[in-house]
Length: 143
Image 1 (cartoon, helix red, strand yellow):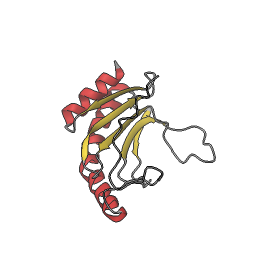
Image 2 (cartoon, one colour; image 1 turned 180 degrees about the horizontal axis):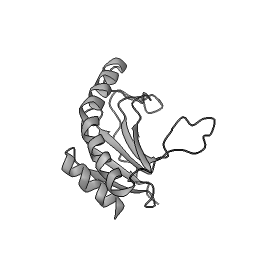
Image 3 (tube, one colour; image 1 turned 90 degrees about the vertical axis):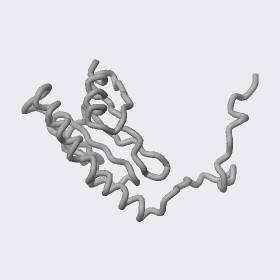
Image 4 (cartoon, helix red, strand yellow; image 1 turned 90 degrees about the horizontal axis):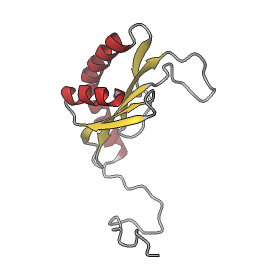
């Protein structure tokens, strides 16, 4: 049997035996970019989540984000009911039923949104960066 991975291209500058992660931007620049992405996208995402909650689970769901958790350039927002019990390792106050993640490239530039609906068997939808695309993606994740 032929190995289908034989022709994979190596990442330039990384030794094949190395487990190092290739980062295109220094850590401080990534943090600045992450903060600016949150500042730019949060108002739009919060508007859409407010509309979803008002129409779908008013008074039950709340919204939140991972802004306080520094994961490189990862930007995530979520909605769901308040958490009733916490595991000792979990600091989330909201149980994530819908999660929106800003997809980024290796320069920490946004490329689109990934919407995950945990209530619909983990249905995942990828869309563009506009508010209309985000709304379309959330609707598709609930279908």
